[in-house]
Length: 89
Image 1 (cartoon, rainbow, N blue to C red):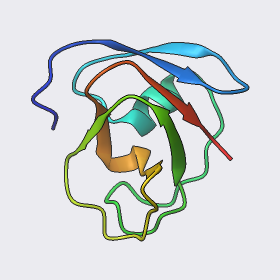
Image 2 (image 1 turned 90 degrees about the horizontal axis):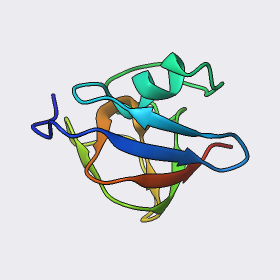
Image 3 (image 1 turned 135 degrees about the vertical axis):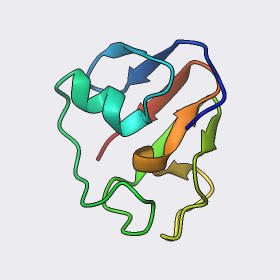
Image 4 (image 1 turned 60 degrees about the horizontal axis):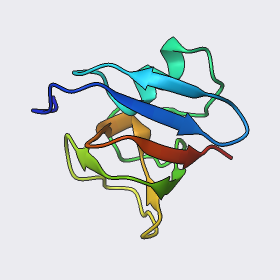
């Protein structure tokens, strides 16, 4: 679980900006706001939720085991460290 207790804005390109709540993964925040995203796990090893990070920073609960590029994140196992902008395919 994230040590960060702050709430941030998650701007989802071509969707809307939503409020991220502390102690929730980014995937949980996306789901809470009824935004469709593909996923098959919550452990960082499948990569189905791979998302582009356009702005901001995240931290990982566990190191992802799926391959991700430098501009990609796995929402299933990360938490925002700041307000962020992402793009969901």
